[in-house]
Every structure is written in structure tokens, then in C-alpha cells.
Length: 339
Image (cartoon, rainbow, N blue to C red):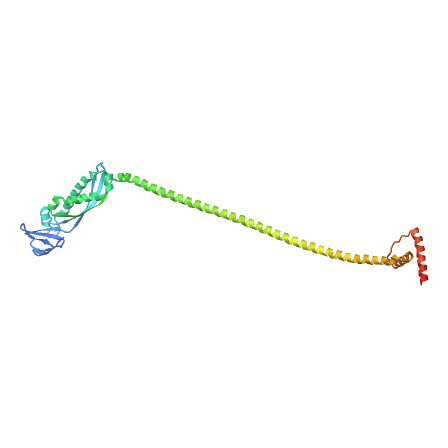
């Protein structure tokens, strides 16, 4: 918007570089350019201010597909004024000479113009395909047709307008139809989620089974080791008993050997003693072999007299007493004679 200052009956205008100024005096164009600054009299002057910078125009309109489904097209058109004098002749961009504001709404007329052309091109292209096909191709195809159609629009070129770019940001069906279209995809997503859940559960079950098998293998290994331990303990006990029995056998054998040795020694001693006694008795008998019986009987009596103090009982028969007394007397007589 231009800035207008008042000095008595004169006015001064200062415009921005983004605006093209058309100054008319008495119906004739006397000045045309961007960012002009000048003095003027409001009584014989009219001024038009045309924005020449790029302008972004949003649009939102509805169309119908080949299968009679309502579709919403949303996007923006970026345009600019390339021939401001031509556009100034087609639309009224006159400004208030006191405030510097537009007297009409030419920008709204441009917006309606672009929206109408864009909607016309979009509706024609939407009616050529089914809604599923349109949604499958996305907004790119409609954007391409819109850009070509607007660039080729003769009316826009004749008005001094040029298309910079066209952007289609959304291509949407009705909410009910979109929900119906999303249902299979949601089902597939849910199926994938269920499959992932089942796979996770199966993996958890597999891990639990592996853990159970590992625990079972550990129990089997522990049982095997326990069996080996029991067998080893039994073997150790048997070896210990065998060693104890062997030691006892050796000890008994040693004791038997010692007993046998003692018995042999005692037997040998007895044999030697008895042999010596028998030999002595034999020698004594040999000594008494040539001695008369009376002498022998006397010696026996003498021996008997020496042991009377140890004899408790003595049985003497009459036969023995008669013969013995006779022999004893004879022995005594003989001994007296010899003495």
C-alpha cells in the first residue's frame, strides 16, 4: 500500500518497489513504474496500484470422480503480474488518493478467477477416473494437469498474469468412503500386528521350550553325575572294604603265623624237654637195669619217703604189702651188710 501525505492542496505519494504505479492525468497515462514517488493534484489525477510480486492463492474445491464419488482438492497457486498496464486495463486497481487504499477488491476477483479455472480443470480430470485410481495416483497427476491447464489459459495470459507454480497438497474422498477404503488396509495392518503378536508368542513359547529343555538336560546331567557319584562312592566303599578285608586277612594270617610259630616253638621246646626227660629216664632205666629188684625197691621206698609230706592218700593192698615188705627188708639187710 502506498503512502500519501497532504500539504495544503498538494499530495505526495510514495510507493513500494513491489507495487507498479499507473498515474493518469485527465484520462491519460503520464507515469508508469515500480516504487514511484511524486507530487500530484487530486483534482485531475487518478492512480492505480498493482502488486507485481509473487502471490500465493490457496484453493479448496470439490469434484466428482468417474464413479460419482465426491473428492476434495486442496492446494495453492503461485502467480505474478507480468504486464501490470494490461492488468490495470482489465481490472480496477484505483486507490483512494487520501488514504492510499484500493477502492475495489481486484485481488478477490483474481482469486475467484484462478479458483474457477483451477476447479474447472480439476473437475474435468477427476471425472475421467475412478476414485480408487485417483487416490492411487495421488495428487501429483491432478497437480500436473492443473499446472498445464493454467499455463495454457489464454485469458490469464491476455490479462498479463503468469503462473509461477501449482501445488496440490491433498486429494481426499468423503470421510465415509475414506474410512471404507482404509478398512482393508487397517485389516492388513491388524493382521500384520496379529501375525507379529503370534510370532512373538511363538518365539516366547519356543524360548520357554528351549529353557525347559535346557532345565531338563541340566536335570539329566545332574542325575547322570549323581549316578556316577553314587557308583564312585560304591566303588570307593567296596575298595575300602576290600582293603580292610585284605588288611584283616593279613593281620589274621600274621597272627596265625605267629601262633603257628609260637606253637612250633613251644612244641619244639616240649619236644626237646620231653626228649631230654625221656633220654634221662631211659638212661636211668639203663642204670637200674642190672640192679637187683630189692635195691630198686629200696630206692623207690627212699624216694617215697622223701615225698610223704605231699601224698594225701595211699592205698596198699595185702599182696603188695607182703611182697613189698619182704623185698624192703631184704634190701635193708643187704644195705646194712654192705655198710
